[in-house]
Image 1 (cartoon, rainbow over the protein chains, first blue to last red):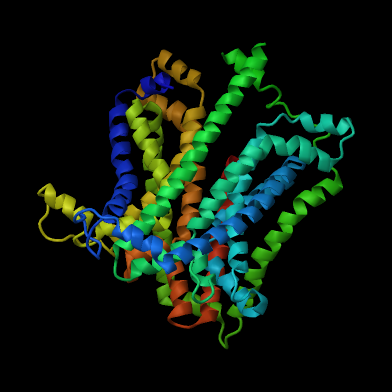
Image 2 (image 1 turned 120 degrees about the horizontal axis):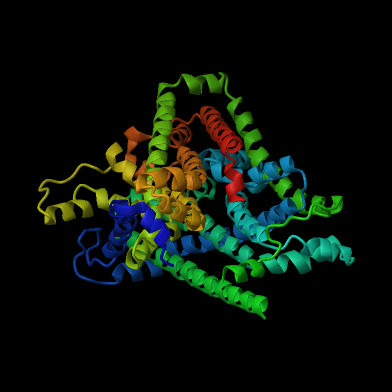
Length: 282
Length: 291
């Protein structure tokens, strides 16, 4: 979609704006390119530009027990955390549509967004103090999973809320007039409409939790590391190409999953739009 | 086409007042599980922190606030957050506008950068900045190739080296809401402004800015609040002389071994940050833009 009204009204300021933006995009590309290129060096230390080309650090990372364990721990934490966050974020978004009082709605909305503002280090210290008191929560990942879930709830809440705000508000009263109980309405009216947004929220929550490093600094049991924590430790020791190889691998995985997901969902919304247009004209 | 779209989304803007309020049982089952979860995961740590902060012989809060290192880190963190916020909102506005008015290849390049930044972890991006800024790192190599510099650069673990990385980490959070506002605003107003002979500056001030102002504020508030809790990027790139509040808290626990002071500082940081967010939320309705 070309945006000629905006382009016309911006006039000759268009060029400087484009130049500023293109220069700015370098801060996104350059660090990533450096990480990727340094991972294929043949040397045993990181050097830029890389010397030669080899995949030895990739095979090194993929066969190293420490990196593999860290990856598995992160997968576990992110899966459990995502399930909790999706469940609670969706419940909150559904509850929001059923509140009539403007003040209550605004408070609920704030409550579900505010975890984004919590400074992770201070929160991690708090969770750590809890684990000092409660022996049940020591030496396992339960507290880490709960804490990460809290930090991810806002993303799910935002996505599902935006889905619900596009829904036809007359559907629920209609279902209720026809005698459907509220659990049936949630199951048959609300959920089918927001399942795509729940999935989007889940993908986002998973990515957020998988990447989060600060809580795991404080809350992983001794000897257990999540992937970002393993990277943090490795970046504070001597810099080996294994670090950038692992970074490249996990980024590629994220780009494949998230890129694949957004292609899939774009196609779905495009198809839905076509269908609804057809239905409207028919 | 416009008619079709209006037909395709009927009633989305209408809100029937009657029957909008849920039943009591419904609200209880939908709202209570998340509320109980929030209570456990937020109140639990806060109570534990208060307990820990009051466990020492002296008053840990007084000790924290009278510690010069801590007070200096508070000012440093506030300054850092303010600079990062101003920079990300300004540059973010240009970035969002450029995505809207640029030719297709510029659009693709800019969106690609944004997505790379969103999809790769902060850890990976920080490592990338580290490798750029090391004395004989990638940046030095580029400058040397361009013939601009022959001796190693001193950026790694300095204040100057820390800022670009932090701005890069936070920029997407400012660009995304502004981009959403730029894409969705009314083109007819722009046409009207042009028809009535308004120049670029007047159009920007009278039409564009008022429509995206709210998004700039929401993005800015989010960036500011998140920057207050910055930890990893300043730790790796700023070095010991640039410790943020989060860095000082970590040092209290792990090197100074003063868990009570660390707990008091954590309470101050969480309380301060959440208070700033709540005030900004009441003033600018930030949450309503998100939720």
